[in-house]
Length: 84
Image 1 (cartoon, rainbow, N blue to C red):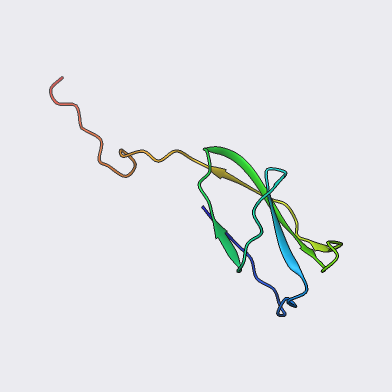
Image 2: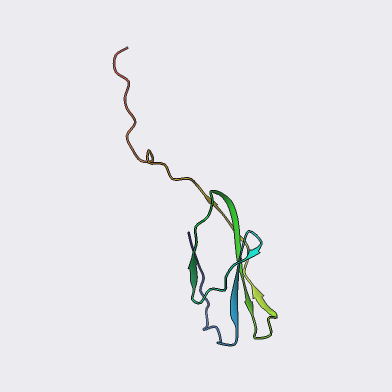
């Protein structure tokens, strides 16, 4: 899973983005996104922009998404019964 974000203006070096996944703070990303492996099910993510003192400047809306388990049968033709 890749979580990415963008800003209308460049983020000053004195500020940092803090990513939260399922209410838990994640490692501070160094760029505009982060890739992680997630268990299947419902997840929620949001990011916060913090100043050099760690004070909250802005918070994104929370995004809810679902991870589904991959199946090798996905997209495969199903056998057609023969006979009667």
